[in-house]
Image (cartoon, rainbow, N blue to C red):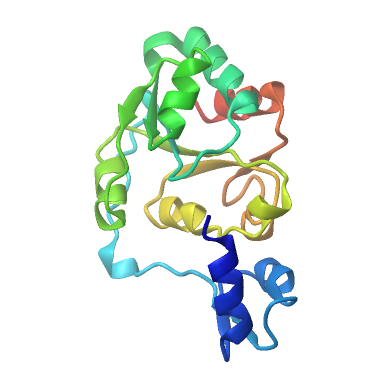
Length: 193
């Protein structure tokens, strides 16, 4: 519904600012002048994750829009059945309903303002950010801000091995990158738990 007016605004704008080089490349057909200004995080506003050895692991899946969940849903069901009370799944936003429809037992949280998002997530014991993303052009042009949000608070991250995450996560060091299959997602969750 908003595509036409947005395209027209980009065509008449003097300059566009976007968050990733990939998005700049995708929009160059609409604008002559584009700058890339990556996301960052204000470190002084950070809470640190509640991490303890051997406690419950909270798998946090958050999405403000609808995303594919098929490849992650089966892995989450398997993780819950394998680790029982040792794993709890928290779903924030519309993704909660999609996961529940696929049989995932999860705590449903509504979308909250960004400034409260991490402080509330850091209250969960052993939070792990789960960031599934399909390999579409649209998804590839997204910002990796969700990774930055988790990482700056010391929240471990497992993300799909697709853009934009494969450009900012060093696999095995600053997070885990996995292919979009049930087996790869479950193996990564098992490793973190």
